[in-house]
Amino acid sequence: MSPPMERAAQVACVILLLVMPPLGAAGQVLAESASDETSAFERFFDRGRYEAQFGGGALFSPFVATRNRPTIDYTTTYLQLGYMLGDVKREGWLRGNLELAAEGFGNAIFEGPGGYIAGATLWLRYNFVPRWSLGLVPYVQAGAGFVSTDIDHHIVGQPFNFNLDIGVGMRYFIARDWALDLECRYQHISNANLGRKNLGINSIGPILGISYFF
Image (cartoon, rainbow, N blue to C red):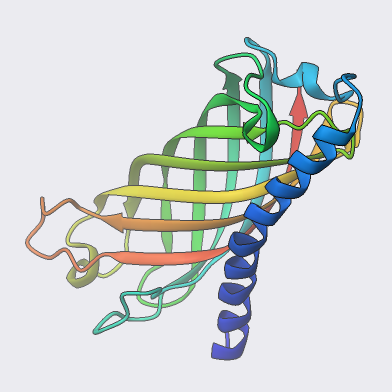
């Protein structure tokens, strides 16, 4: 992918990161002016409910730490199962709940020294569930897991590596039980100094998915 397109993807993620706090503040204003009637989709975030999600996107590196790091850009496709750890609590823009999600993913490298990255991630997600019924549910999440890759060992050191991830995004309910997901995801891949080489990868990019709640 050309540098302008990579820059556009990274800028889009930064914009999403910047607009999340104002959206939360707007949610608090709307919640204060709305009635006590809860949103129609809040039941999906009750303790013990599940969320199945399928999605994909593209991640671009290097990001932030760029010195002596090669370009490694890759697509990602994932399947995720989430479990609501608790009911929706608190008030204002912090109103929401915690969700634990397990994800399996496969990445195809289209720019850089390697062919694939495959692995699994365990996510802890906080869903911001407002009282107002606009169908929008922002979230933030962090996760960790492991990967197997054929990337040049001068970069990642060995086939087995670990991944650390951060994501910020938003769901939009398009129908009963179904929502679209737009996310900006950061991923770090390294071997935690278990290998002789550990340059590592830092990538960022947009993710688009669809969720089914049950």
